[in-house]
Length: 295
Image (tube, rainbow, N blue to C red; front, side, top):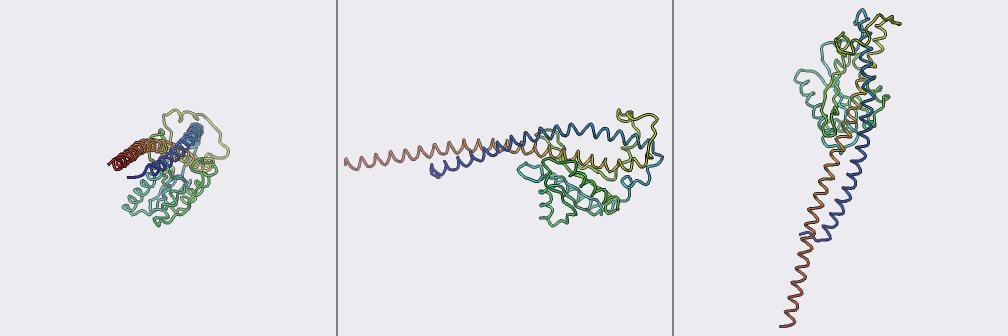
């Protein structure tokens, strides 16, 4: 049985750990609020981008000749998992990588090669540990992605697709639903589906109806808009991933603090029992000594 001093040291150690997990929970909660506000600010821009693309596509005589819209037989697929730069976030990173490996196995069954590119230190280190060849890795901005960071990723994947090095690009990320729930999403960002540019009956499709004169030609405008659309989609995915990471970390640290409290209660009870056992032993020793002196 452990001594009272040993148990006291364990209690102090767990108490210090609980202070750290509580602090990390508060930090993650503050970052989560900022991430949510950035997502809300991003949505009107993304919707307006969609409206603009639909309006320009209507005015275009042909969508042929735009590299990011060209569909071809899939022989090689780029897999882009969006992971975090740090751990201590529950299953946040693990479920992204699990889905990425599942997609790779499906592609292998279809005789389609996988080209790995990754965002986040955790994803990059896991892939390299498993001896995967990583074409490109971006790190250092998972907590608070900037648009400039997204432009570097979007430019690389657009270049891979335009030069026919890959025939499809799939991004895998955690979609933020709540601090307790993050849903893994695998989204095909390239080629851009032409259905996005077709006229529809929703409210966004009616936004740009009318007789417009375009300068330069609509096809040239659309050629410039398509890469921006890829950037917008990746930026939205990174913002969703950042919010999901903070939500997962906040939940994980809250659970860790709760478990630490339960462990402290258990150790305190164990320490009290050990102290009582020591007192009882001392009393027995005194009584035995007194009996020996009187006999």
